[in-house]
Image (cartoon, rainbow over all chains, first blue to last red; front, top):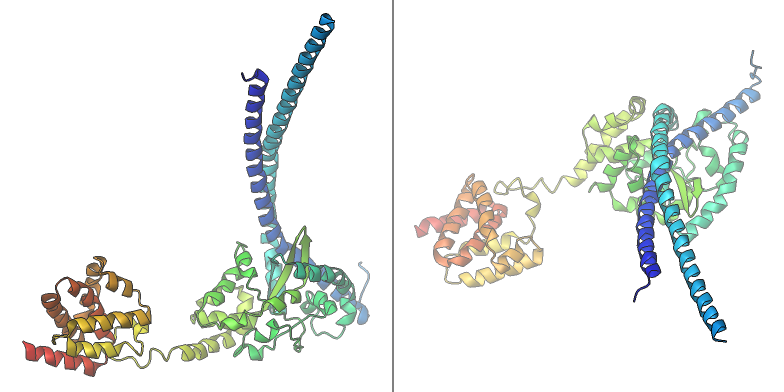
Length: 72
Length: 403
């Protein structure tokens, strides 16, 4: 005869499995969207790097040509 | 003694009961935790992430202009891509990581004499890593991207141009929705005019691209493609200048003239297949005009009205085997769909004497061959389409004599 505890535990386990499946789907969707965002942000990062390099280059150029002035 | 035993049994049962209850409680707790986690992920995290995606796309919209601006000034097109997972590549990408930082610090000194400041903004990482390969723009007309792919270091007058068209990056770059360049990158690859060798030695190419990110086991790299080179590829696929509208307007002006010249060269290379077209050949199926095809047709003209009809059909089947036509299976199986296809060539056959002759042959076949005729109708129609006019005229004469 099946004990009531076993029955209840089986039910709980099946509930847990269902919940884990749902959670897994949610996390996968989250990962997917985050990956898309990352790929999209790579372009922004490229722009940021380009600006950073441009700034350092401009700084170097101005220093080399002695035309760097303090901000007024 | 018996009381002790019963008490012990009772305690064991109680213990078991307690354990079972504990297990149940723990399982309930696990279940509630999982459901809570699911609720948190779906209820609060996902909407926030979607908002974040929206905002980051807004940021990208704002910085898109500057990316195009820098790209236009450096005459390259940049895009990040996810490097395929490979242990050898990850090692190299790790080794590239630190020099990249050094390169940014050292870039002003290393490129002191450069003409344009903004042109070597992206240049610094590769300069330090020493894997910079810059193609000569003049050579890109005849051999696009070949030199740069093979990790041979070209030193062009301006060190800002990158090669870096990685075929592995194509699918990923196409995922970037707001980058107009992604569509342009797809075209050259799918183009039949594009020599595939230009993309083949990609294995050596991976290290050329500077590393952008390294997240867990994936490394993201920057892919840079010279504009003029890409332009010519693109123009080879689509000779119309309308393709240039995908790029930013300031991209178009400096490079528009070489891009227009390229398609003529390419089309000359690939057009001669159409040049020797004979009047009898259908315009719709010029590619089927293979060398071996007319021969069975000539034999058709002779044998159709001879008692050797079956020999001809056998040879016909053999030739269709050789040339791997789509129709050969149908011919062998003599499947009913052939009769449906019969109508298409018949309408075309009505236009010239050659088609008329083939139509007569078809009628004759219908009369003589019975069920087999339906299969041969199609085959004969196609064969006569590709036959030279003299051959067709001969069949026509024979036809006239018959009737």
